[in-house]
Length: 124
Image 1 (cartoon, rainbow, N blue to C red):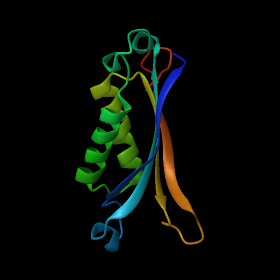
Image 2: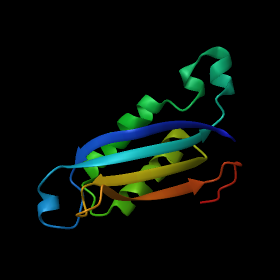
Image 3: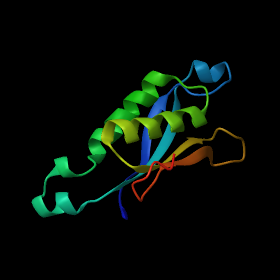
Protein backbone atom coordinates (compact mmCIF):
# COMPACT_ATOMS: atom_id res chain seq x y z
CA UNK A 1 0.00 0.00 0.00
CA UNK A 2 1.61 3.24 -1.13
CA UNK A 3 -1.03 5.84 -0.31
CA UNK A 4 -0.70 7.79 2.92
CA UNK A 5 -3.19 9.84 4.88
CA UNK A 6 -1.32 12.19 7.20
CA UNK A 7 -1.74 14.71 9.99
CA UNK A 8 1.00 17.23 10.78
CA UNK A 9 1.64 19.22 13.95
CA UNK A 10 -1.46 18.11 15.84
CA UNK A 11 -1.11 20.27 18.95
CA UNK A 12 -2.34 18.89 22.26
CA UNK A 13 -1.97 20.40 25.73
CA UNK A 14 -1.63 17.59 28.26
CA UNK A 15 0.23 16.21 31.24
CA UNK A 16 3.35 14.33 30.16
CA UNK A 17 6.74 13.81 31.75
CA UNK A 18 8.55 12.37 34.73
CA UNK A 19 9.39 15.52 36.72
CA UNK A 20 7.11 16.79 39.48
CA UNK A 21 6.34 20.05 37.65
CA UNK A 22 5.49 18.08 34.49
CA UNK A 23 2.87 16.15 36.46
CA UNK A 24 1.16 19.44 37.45
CA UNK A 25 1.41 21.65 34.37
CA UNK A 26 -0.05 21.15 30.91
CA UNK A 27 2.59 21.02 28.21
CA UNK A 28 2.37 21.36 24.46
CA UNK A 29 2.78 18.09 22.60
CA UNK A 30 3.07 18.00 18.81
CA UNK A 31 2.05 14.83 16.99
CA UNK A 32 2.58 13.79 13.37
CA UNK A 33 0.79 10.80 11.89
CA UNK A 34 1.31 8.90 8.63
CA UNK A 35 -1.22 6.14 7.95
CA UNK A 36 -1.06 3.68 5.07
CA UNK A 37 -4.30 3.20 3.19
CA UNK A 38 -5.66 2.83 -0.32
CA UNK A 39 -7.39 6.10 -1.16
CA UNK A 40 -8.76 4.92 -4.53
CA UNK A 41 -12.13 3.58 -3.27
CA UNK A 42 -12.85 6.85 -1.45
CA UNK A 43 -11.74 8.92 -4.43
CA UNK A 44 -13.99 7.03 -6.85
CA UNK A 45 -17.13 7.43 -4.73
CA UNK A 46 -16.10 10.56 -2.78
CA UNK A 47 -17.00 8.58 0.34
CA UNK A 48 -15.17 9.38 3.58
CA UNK A 49 -16.18 5.99 4.98
CA UNK A 50 -13.88 4.33 2.43
CA UNK A 51 -10.69 5.95 3.69
CA UNK A 52 -8.95 6.85 6.94
CA UNK A 53 -10.87 9.83 8.33
CA UNK A 54 -8.09 12.10 9.59
CA UNK A 55 -10.55 14.16 11.61
CA UNK A 56 -11.80 11.11 13.53
CA UNK A 57 -8.25 9.86 14.04
CA UNK A 58 -7.10 13.29 15.27
CA UNK A 59 -9.95 13.53 17.78
CA UNK A 60 -9.18 10.03 19.10
CA UNK A 61 -5.45 10.82 19.40
CA UNK A 62 -6.19 14.04 21.28
CA UNK A 63 -8.52 12.25 23.68
CA UNK A 64 -5.97 9.49 24.33
CA UNK A 65 -3.18 12.03 24.89
CA UNK A 66 -5.17 14.20 27.28
CA UNK A 67 -6.69 11.36 29.30
CA UNK A 68 -3.49 9.28 29.44
CA UNK A 69 -1.30 11.65 31.46
CA UNK A 70 1.72 9.65 30.28
CA UNK A 71 5.18 9.75 31.81
CA UNK A 72 7.09 9.00 28.59
CA UNK A 73 6.67 10.18 24.99
CA UNK A 74 7.65 6.61 24.03
CA UNK A 75 4.60 5.22 25.82
CA UNK A 76 2.32 7.81 24.24
CA UNK A 77 3.66 7.01 20.75
CA UNK A 78 3.12 3.27 21.28
CA UNK A 79 -0.44 3.77 22.54
CA UNK A 80 -1.28 6.04 19.63
CA UNK A 81 0.10 3.55 17.09
CA UNK A 82 -1.77 0.64 18.68
CA UNK A 83 -5.04 2.59 18.83
CA UNK A 84 -4.84 3.73 15.20
CA UNK A 85 -4.03 0.25 13.92
CA UNK A 86 -6.71 -1.40 16.05
CA UNK A 87 -9.57 1.11 16.02
CA UNK A 88 -9.13 2.44 12.47
CA UNK A 89 -7.87 -0.70 10.70
CA UNK A 90 -4.65 0.91 9.51
CA UNK A 91 -2.02 -1.69 8.53
CA UNK A 92 0.98 0.65 8.93
CA UNK A 93 1.45 3.84 10.89
CA UNK A 94 4.27 6.24 11.64
CA UNK A 95 3.85 8.30 14.81
CA UNK A 96 6.03 11.21 15.86
CA UNK A 97 5.55 12.72 19.34
CA UNK A 98 7.46 15.92 20.12
CA UNK A 99 7.79 18.17 23.16
CA UNK A 100 8.89 21.69 22.21
CA UNK A 101 11.27 23.33 24.66
CA UNK A 102 11.70 20.22 26.82
CA UNK A 103 15.49 20.43 26.69
CA UNK A 104 17.32 23.69 27.06
CA UNK A 105 18.97 24.92 23.85
CA UNK A 106 16.81 22.54 21.81
CA UNK A 107 13.77 23.42 19.73
CA UNK A 108 12.09 20.12 20.54
CA UNK A 109 12.69 16.52 21.57
CA UNK A 110 10.66 13.42 20.88
CA UNK A 111 10.34 9.99 19.38
CA UNK A 112 9.22 8.58 16.06
CA UNK A 113 8.02 5.01 15.64
CA UNK A 114 6.64 2.89 12.81
CA UNK A 115 4.36 -0.07 13.41
CA UNK A 116 2.82 -2.58 11.04
CA UNK A 117 3.51 -3.21 7.41
CA UNK A 118 2.61 -1.35 4.24
CA UNK A 119 2.40 -4.66 2.41
CA UNK A 120 -0.42 -6.04 4.55
CA UNK A 121 1.54 -8.44 6.81
CA UNK A 122 1.81 -7.95 10.57
CA UNK A 123 5.35 -6.52 10.67
CA UNK A 124 4.85 -5.13 14.18
